[in-house]
Image (cartoon, rainbow, N blue to C red; front, side):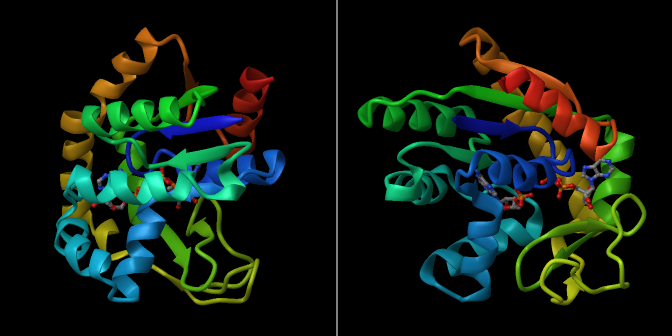
Length: 213
Ligand code: ADP
Ligand code: AMP
């Protein structure tokens, strides 16, 4: 199973990604998570990526394509993977196609998680993430059992800096301009499935599974 999760920030890619990788036992490759870890550890990649992430802009294609290529070449991705937040530009999509071709692989499906902007704003501003394991919660729609504490590992929950209202608007605009054209790109390849992401988490997951099976 080689899956891409496409959709605007806040659509539920990370949430569905967690469920899908558990079911299919494949690695969850989230470029956002990789970049945030690099920024936290102050690696060379992190230092280069920081200003873009903070402003809600996309990190240059060259940087991101490199890390994904390296990640997909690892042994645990040989029999499948789930890409979350990548590709995000036509250039990234073409680079992904080229590297998969080189490895003799192709994508199984691209799941486009579709959600209206108003709902996205509410989801992003209420999102909380575990500092230790990266699990995602929502103060209203998916709250932890104990306030600010991760159910899975007991870690502290925090609000991502780029989930502040002004940055969220910028990220949504970047999505419309740079990422949305990928819907047509994958439709043309006949591998796109659009799911109604405004439904409850369990229903979105059930629809995706039904399609994949
Ligand atoms: P993305 O990875 O696409 O940016 P997330 O998976 O982090 O999105 O989800 C954004 C926020 O919305 C999180 O706080 C998450 O708990 C919440 N969320 C995700 N899916 C749903 C859903 N179907 N209904 C309500 N809230 C959701
Ligand atoms: P995400 O966690 O997917 O919402 O991503 C958070 C931020 O990381 C984005 O706003 C971008 O700055 C950066 N980022 C993540 N994935 C990519 C990508 N594929 N291309 C460029 N920038 C990315």
